[in-house]
Length: 576
Image 1 (cartoon, rainbow, N blue to C red):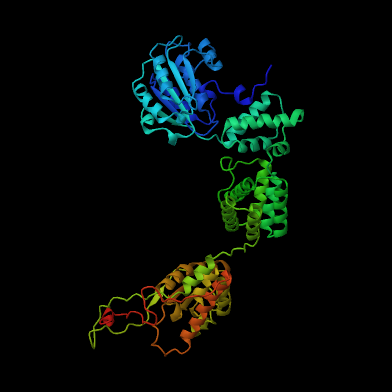
Image 2 (image 1 turned 90 degrees about the vertical axis):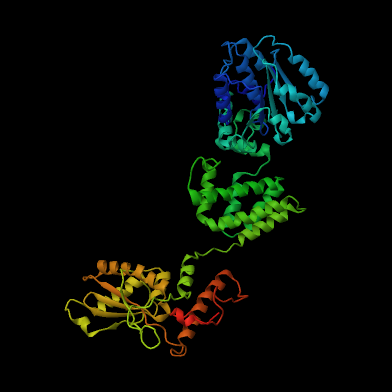
């Protein structure tokens, strides 16, 4: 008996056997059950996804002898279903659009459609690759397509929907067939192998499914080829790789490990093996990109069967690399390799293009967490002071309110950073149980336990012991703007909590806002110290990115060197 390929032998014969096209199966079955039979159907999609197969199943359902009307699911056992499956039914006409392109062919078809079916309920005209019909032939078909005889149903199939005229599309029910997921293809291949009493490795079936690129027919053809190569020894991943001429999964793991270890020599050695084996470098680049993609998905979204198209052993390789590369580093390597993949299309030296990409990937510098650095810069950045509204008190002199003393603000507990030596008051020793020295030590421990971005808020602050369990914090004028004061208030509860856990006395901390800064020149060296501190932070950023300062711009909304807005709106009169 002649050999029958898997694509023909295991072709679906019923709607329920269709794989990966549930949306089409359900629509057609429901329409047939309700008696909604359209005059024309148009099936579009890539090759090998079931367009012609579905057209034949639909023809069976329209003419199935198990009922006196169209059925939602053909029985597959009656004479009509059997003849359609063999391609011998007299009322089912399958036409190849590539050879049926002229107006004369359409006129000949129209003459045949005038007669009623010989055996079935409907005459079904299946035109494959309908986009290859000439425009004149399409125009000749329009009238018949719009008002066909009641016993005629057209089914068109095409892989290039954009070439079908709009006038044809508007007269058809259009269905778009999707690519079949690799997991579904691999499951069907496993059933075929089992039916043939072969043994197959899961990795081999997954590789064949990926090589099919969403086409069941292509995957089944590859399966037949690999089974012929393997013989009685069973289907292995190594045999599939040898037949298909693709690099093994070990190559991708080795090169990704070399990139993670910044080992350029090993990375180039792995690429040399791929090149010398004659593998397609574009295919290799695409698979290495998929490998890096899986590593990033593992880090960001975790594991899930619907997120990966890889077997257990391949997933182990990806987990190992995901632990060596951070998400940012893997993303940077992906971007470099993706640009190389674009360059490969027009490169005269594809090997060198990939070599340079791997070298750049091996030179990726470890990326630091910039969160702390950003918080530090935000804490150092000067914020504009908000003018306070006039107090409801007597105005003197020129109608301005008298200067109010610096307010004392009661703050919730918080956390902070390094401080200057706190001053003690005489009343601190009023209680025999209160130990200012021990309280100072606990305070410094609490500050040291904070994040660096919070510690900097308390730099230069003064701490006074007002009495047992009562502390007063005075912030230097440089940190007295509203944003910093809010951050300090948010942090103080952490310090009070630290005292509650590590000291015998509860502590309440009051926050004293600093006095308004003195006029320029009254605090010599203050501005210079702050400027040095800001320059130190900026230089740290420059050193981190190996950059250089090319321009210095003033703060937005304020001219360089211009004084801040006056506290009283009246002071700003006459200014631009």
